[in-house]
Amino acid sequence: MEERINDLEEKLEEKDERIEELETRLRKYENPHTPPSKRRSGTDESPTSQDDEDDDVRTDGGTPGRKDGHEPEWRSTADPDEEVEVTRDCCPECGQHFDESVGVSPRLVEEIPDPQPPELTQYNRHCYQCDSCGTETVATHPDCPDEGQFGVNVIAQSALSRYDYRLPYRKIADRFEQLHGLELSGATAWHATERAARAGRCEYEQICRQIQQADVVHIDETGIKRDGEQAWIWTFTTENHTLYAVRESRGSDVPAEVLGEDFAGTVICDGWTAYPAFSDNLQRCWAHILREAEDAAEKQPEGEPIYDSLKQLYVALQTRLESDLTTRERAELQRVARRELESLIERSVPDGPVATLLGKIEGGLDHWLTFVGEPAVSPTNNAAENALREPVVLRKLIGTLRNDRGMFVHETVLSLLATWRQQGRNPYDELKRVSRNNEMISRDQAVPAVESSG
Image 1 (tube, rainbow, N blue to C red):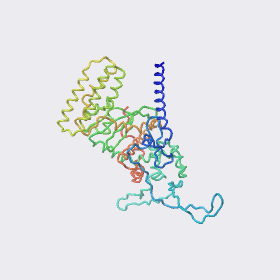
Image 2: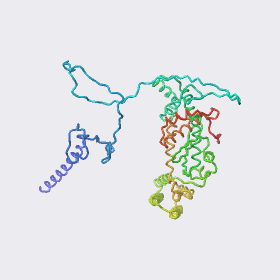
Image 3: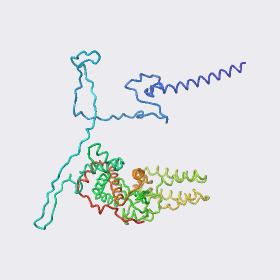
Image 4: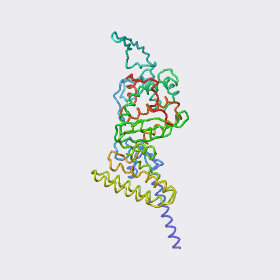
């Protein structure tokens, strides 16, 4: 009998603990607007309190909003351009006339103007003939493009809508009509975007020259279709510039063409064979080899210690390089790290993913540790991979480039927008600037700089 009583008491204690646990969990849902500090202390206040924070329970275990201890960020509002007095003459309930208001409840409302109709301007461009040499000259105006009937705003908006907002040309035309009553076709929107590319091609070439002079360049490439056939879009990225080049070749001829055969800088890249064929001064991407090592470890038990050793070596190198090392210390660290990689290569493993992994490590042995000796070199190629994200998204939307002119526009506008953003410049203002410069190249020149290599 006494044992049964003890069992019942134990069960009751367990139930009490369970009830207390459930009550604790339920308190989180009683008032989702109560701050966590008040929930813990049990000082729940009214859900309408202005001091309470939105703390709705989330399925991932976190809470929305700013973290504790972080200052809130308020959206700044400019002074009003106009003040409107909103009054009432009588009571809406009984009809009694009001003598005067007893207070004011201000509300700031930000609004955009109604769609503005297009402005039609006729530029009477005067023609002149030199009495001395006979040269005929037509006067120019920055707001009057050398060709076409649409101004710099239309050209800039078309290119931005295509490559920033990722709209089809048909929808770009619809947008112009909806916002401004400007009727144009999808083909016209394409021609306006092409004019933006031809106007910005001189700046594209300047970006190319800047990259050719860089000490370190990240390079990567991904596939894209040209009229249904395989092509590639290459990216060449530095700290302040990004250049895209669409080519039908994935060989070493493309970096040789873009960077020049005498390029003396360091190339950060993945393991594609075109890069060692182009340059001996490489830094192979550690993010790639660590992912491949992890994948090999999941497929083959012999890969686990190799993956762990690679990861530990990479972390140790990164930690050591955080201190201000001399050139001599860096060289010694590089020698020690190379011996570690060589010891991994010497391991005997059966054929399979791990053997393939060790072969890749051995094949890039001269290029894994460049970042140890050169402070400006990154151990990963994340910069180039990030630069390819926008072209990859566009590839999913547009499917294929139609011809050489499409390749030309694609690489030019993408390069300009990416570089301007890196430099903190406003893409819309910059597109208008290059359109106003009246340096638009001819359509005959609007093709990639190199013929297809096959």
